[in-house]
Image (cartoon, rainbow, N blue to C red):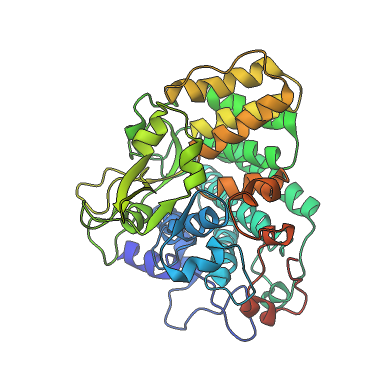
Length: 454
């Protein structure tokens, strides 16, 4: 009964769009009071678990495939045959484009959920160790969602409590500097309080190294090269993690490369391992996929690259061989073998390589890149490469290694000012303005203090 109550209260988003609110709405009178969720350790822990469940709920979509699909289409990873994604495929977004409201509203629902956990835990009579752990997990998840909001829409409101509903609903955007400082501070606090050991036998709740991994990424995106290198160092040095030699095991729930994963909870569709696998893998093995890797990206793979052999799958349409993304290989099946991998070790090598490159540590940067290439069955890059050559090699390795994962390619191209020169060769009439993702009209209507991302 406790599990049911906690799930019904917290696993569904606490955010709904209405004509006058964009952050939260009051819960139904029939809902269990939030305070009861923190009455004891068992229910408080289940409440935090409900946050992860909500994020990987297919009905919510942001963290269960939607963001990956739309950002893959905006970049040059893969695109969808469904016409509802055409504006992403052709980079012609408008405030009326489908799904844009979800890219805003759903992260804010998880942020609101995190804020409620932090406040509820603090006001509870839980032990200090339980308080520290659960608050740290909520801080980590709050930053994770702010990271995506800030990189999707540039300037967004910074909401850190649930005390003043109306003020939060009308809050203006924070600067990039404010958002960066908040994310770093929140993760540093989480790193102090969160356990280094995983809670349970799986990696579905973040630990200290998950915090370090996300902090490394945050530092990287804001050009803090020394700290990005230091954080990535800490993760890479942990012998619990290793680059999986068999690429077919990277996205399994037992993967030693995984730092943090989300477990799918099936509410209506039996046997789903991951929602991305369910969406991309055809129901019939011989059928075509509705998703196609861009031709230019397929052509970027070197001969004998194991990532092409194991993470792409060919299919034929009108006598032409196309490729679908195939990192997740299970549409449905029991027992569950795959989890949605959010943070993994390979990214930390690539983060450290970029951080070292920007500190002119060229041999060390090459060493990290070559670790990823060697795992993919490729020859090491020569030590004679200059800084510009290493930068291009790193861009390519990030493209092929992280293809179709959490929008990495789109964010990389935008943050390094490479979107225009790269995507204009792949897409017709791509311009600098196409790198801006607009805020949905429905969101702007709710708050006069918001600014369109243009």
